[in-house]
Length: 266
Image 1 (spheres, rainbow, N blue to C red):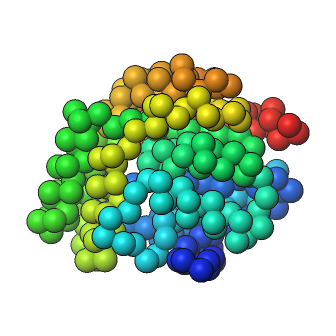
Image 2 (cartoon, rainbow, N blue to C red):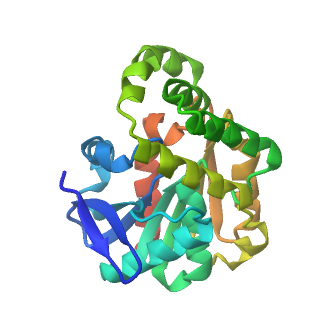
């Protein structure tokens, strides 16, 4: 999968694309210790069910990260990238932090967003929930890459999945660079100030909220709140897949595609 770079007056941002459909779907991934660009082939394979009907663009965050980088800036950069690529009105799927960016994008630039899919996301990171992210930041700042990966994976995956991959954690951690750690800290610390509750009524496009009852990172209540406060929204909750339900549920992409098809003509 070829990694491309979009350039604006303020930043550059890496992305990759696949599919051949007339409609454009932008995917905004959640936090990861390493860039999702390294997993481009795997992501394209995972979303191959969408490739015949959509052209899919998967965006990273900007390359030139400032020491403090807010969710609001991430949304603004995403809007600039969409415009620089002349994508027009797009559907947007955001997972976890990517969903937060997607919501802010729909709030601030409604003319760019045709419909939203929000996976395992939240409009507000409570102090209790943020303690998990603080723990990740502490491990990252200490340079404890193995424990960082272990804590991250144990939180997002169900126990049975984590048990299957736990032995692979040290090898994965050995591939993490200092630049990966620097970026991860900045992107994670941005979650401290996320509060979109008062703006959710500004989202006017159709939205599909997909969550999991056993989400240990942001909680089931986060998805319920999105359903209740986004006017034109629908909710489906999985059970048994954890926060990373977007990677694990076998019908997840089919559910996405069904929702997109029902709104592409609007």
